[in-house]
Amino acid sequence: MRSDLSAAAELSPAPRRSGRLALPRADRREVAAIFVGGALGTLARAALAEAFPHSATSWPWPTFAVNIVAAFMLGYFVTRLQERLPLSSYRRPLLGTGLCGGLSTFSTMQVEIVKMLDAHAWGLAAGYAAASIAAGYAAIQLATALVRRVRLRVG
Image 1 (spheres, rainbow, N blue to C red):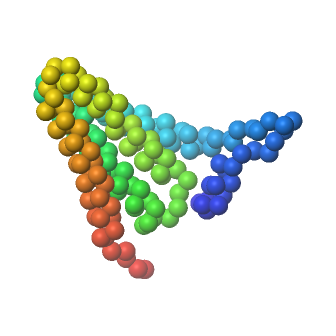
Image 2: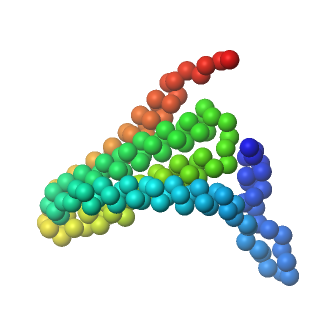
């Protein structure tokens, strides 16, 4: 385990050599954890999008669902890992940055909204944008509340 101070020290710039600032060194295991989590999340999202195609004038359920699930998972993982479990170097990069980052897709949501607007489905586009943002925040709040509600067992 590492402390927050050692994590901050890893991110601090390396000493200057010949007047130039050297970039900090990346923890290869942390990068690998992000990569593995991101690959799993992206594959799951892509599989759902392929399995459930939709037209530009219909609600994009696969994207909506994965974004809300990813928001819930992110709220759960961040709260649980930060407040309930011992500090770990690789759980947050694997689950938070990697898995949830790969599963969620703001860019696809934007493309779908543009397609809705191009198809003159303005109400659908506005509703989809508003519902995605509201449901995402609600999912984070719910997950955080659920983690904090669980009682810790003492020895």
